[in-house]
Length: 288
Image (cartoon, rainbow, N blue to C red):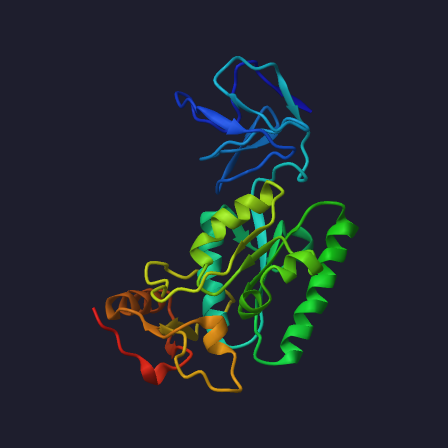
């Protein structure tokens, strides 16, 4: 166990004076990198939230502090937080998971295929068939069991169509920490930060304009043969047997220049084939 000198504020660069921080029972790392000082891992934070046990007060952090001890433990702060992204359902969900991976990278998380090293898991879900939802219930039971077995917190998130359909029920009945609908992925860093602080977080607001045009997806998987580009989202048909308009919202098309930028990125990464995606691709009709 190592000590930090009196007056040092963890994770804040020299010369920067944070005004206030909310005290929490947890030490929260809210940035993409960390450093090791005196043999102890600390985060290079953009936002600093310090652990003080069982305190809900807000206090100035620029005052002189007593030496502060933290054990070298991945239950407090790891040098690289990992997220496990599981994708179920259609090819659109595959493309959305790559958008989610890019947003989680902004929140300081790298992706992993190893369940045991994950600090968070996001299940990208489908509601078209009952079997698809039953699979998610099984995975939620597994992840709740795993965090009990490992004896540490794992943030469990449900995103996509099932999140949009079941909403708060996932939090109330299935131990889920984060619920995000298909149009809420830009808000994931905020939702994850809330979950890190011990709160439940949900955003299921559907949009008439969101296409993630400004997000460059982080490509998942090892194959560089074929990639996906989402060119439109939602559906206006409201077929009696289909839930898509209720979970994906109304149709909106992505601007051509945004599509071409993503195409250039795939080409630069060596992809040889691209599939253009949408709930109803034939309805693509971008209007400035």
